[in-house]
Every structure is written in C-alpha cells, then in structure tokens.
Length: 426
Ligand SMILES: Nc1ncnc2c1ncn2[C@@H]1O[C@H](COP(=O)(O)OP(=O)(O)OP(=O)(O)O)[C@@H](O)[C@H]1O
Ligand SMILES: [Mg+2]
Image (tube, rainbow, N blue to C red):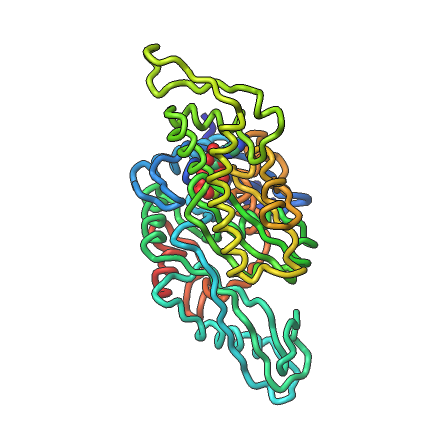
C-alpha cells in the first residue's frame, strides 16, 4: 500500500504542479480522480477510484452510510494509486431539481470610463439582486454585460458608458437534497472546496469551444437522472434536469420480460439499441427467467421486442428533454447541435434516435483534456468527473461563492466550507 502522504507535501519543493481531487456521486457509481494541474500540457491523472453506488436515488443521497462507504472506497482507491491523502474535493451535483433563473443589475457610470471598482460594484449589485426563492444557489455566473442598453458586451472594462448592466445566470437546487449530499460527503471526512452543477462539469469535458460559442445543448443521461446545459456565446445560459435516466430502461426491460435487473442490464448494454434494424426482426435473443433454479426455461424473443421496450421509455425521456430544451429557449436556427453524454449515451444508435426526435445534429461526447485517464474511465459516464478537474483550471467568475469582505477563502472540512455558504444562501 502506498504511504498516505498529505497531498501538499507529496509535491517537491519548487514544483509548479498542484494536485486536485474530484468526486462524482452518481446514482449507479461513485467515482473519484486525483490529478496534477498547472504544469505544461493537460492535467495529469495520478489516481482514480470507483465504487458501485447504492445509497443514491435519482442523483439524490437517500442513505448516508451507504453513500459514505462508496465515497470512502472510491477516494481510498484514488489515494492509494496516487500515493497521497486528500481532505478536500471538488464535487459535482445533479440533484434537487437543478434549474436556472436570471438576475440582473445596473449601475450608473455617468459617461466615465468603466473601472475595476465599477465592475466590483456591479457584481455586488448583481449578487444583491439574486432571489433564490427558498432554494440554494449553486452558481451565480455573470453572463452578459450591457452598456446603455447594448447587450452582449464581453469585456466592458475601460469603455465609456452612462449605465452598465449585467445579467447573471443563477443555478439553484432544493436545499434538502444539498443538505443530504453535504452530510454524506462530510461523513466521509472530506471538505468540499467547490460544488459544480453536473452538466456544467460534463460540458467542460466534452464540448468544443466553438460549439459552446455557436449554441449547443449538452445532455448527460445518467442512471437515475438526466441533466441538461445549454450554451451560447461560449457560456452556459441555462440548466435543467429530468428525474429519469438509463436505469429506467433497465427496470422497464426487467418488468416487460419478467427477468432480473442484472439480466435486464446486460440485455440493454449488449443487445439493446435505440433504433431497430431489419435484422432485429429475425435475430432472437435469450432472456433468462427471474428464478435461476431450472424450473422455468429461458425465453427467446426477436431483438426487436427488446428495442420496442427501450423505445417506449426513450420516447418518454426525450419528450421531457425536448420540453426542458424549449423551456431554456433552445429553439430556432442557433439550436441545432446536441451532444449526448453520461453512461446512457453508450446505448447503441442513441445519437441517430436523438437526431430524429430533436431534429438536431447529435453526437456522443466522451471526456477529453486529461492525460492519463484510465481506460475504464474514458467513456461518457465519466464526462462530469473529468470536467471537475478542468473546472479547477479556470475561474468561473462565480459571484455567489467568492469570499465576501472579511471572509476566509480556505476550504474547510466536513459540513462546512461551500456548504456553509450554500445554506446561508437562503
Ligand atoms: N452500453 C450501454 N448501453 C446503454 N446504457 C448503458 C451502457 N453503458 C452504461 N449504460 C448505463 O449508463 C448508466 C450509468 O451512467 P452514469 O455512470 O453516467 O450514471 P450515474 O452518474 O451513476 O447516475 P446519475 O448521473 O443519474 O446520478 C447506467 O444506467 C447504465 O446501465
Ligand atoms: Mg452522473
């Protein structure tokens, strides 16, 4: 076993790379990565871990002890591989009905040149304008600046204006889901230095900068939930979530063919598809019975029957996705590109299916931008996990979680740090 050395002291003196630990608590798996960032080239993964998740339902923690065990197990594996010990993580969050609102603020500049102090004043006015309506703020991201009513000014610093305004993209979630998540992570003796909405993390790992600029919707189909982020002008402009995922396909298959979930899962991943082919009418697949004692024979059905069960659920899921996209304003000529990710995007022919029902160009996005990502974590199920590392590279410009005057910026352990602020947001 590798020695458990505190993360900071694992690095040599004068070493420019710094370590970052990230955690994705999903409905089907809990996954962790430790990477070195700040050196030349891409961030480098030095440890990874993964455990099945059984204390999480629809991305929401419903059992503290089981979730704590899975978090400890995944982080332990990553720590052993990296030879370091972690006490703070950047974590993803997809529960609590993640959704977006906009807040705006405007200040008087009186024709002067806009100074850094004006920008601070504007952001503070923006922060004060946020009304979470009983929910907790996960992100408050200044989106577009406006000068004298002219929208879409990227960097107003130094320009002259009478009035300077900003629209803030506010992403909120329900407080109880956040509290339960915070408690499970705290029980695993980890502090959360930053919490990132899952679709924003996944978007960083799978989207091309030009896609984000032109307009794209990122859809992360997990086991129990589907989260969506719409990008335009290079930034996220809307987030939504649907409490349905690929595990619902598995449950439907188990119910339709009276078989075990484990068999249904195998059938879905090995034989399943979103679109039937001509061969599916003639090719037969074997479905094991619920009871394995030999009293009931396995049944043989055309593969097309399996695809039909999958399609019924996909039609429901994509009906909800289409509604969410239109609620986010993802309509019209700039809304023509969709990227699917999450483990559910591994379903055969899902991109063709999604292209037909959403009337968009669709591709499946796999995580990029990390060196040394283990082969087992190269698939779309690990987009959010990889994106968390990339999140740590930049400054999101979040005005909610920036330390306020007199506050300490250091991450704290357990149920403090980010969570203290999130709870305080009510
Ligand atoms: N080849 C495949 N075909 C269809 N589904 C697949 C395939 N591979 C994995 N899946 C499904 O992907 C899901 C897991 O995806 P993922 O790991 O993204 O979910 P999660 O992050 O644990 O859950 P959530 O994000 O909902 O909390 C499972 O339901 C699994 O059955
Ligand atoms: Mg997930």
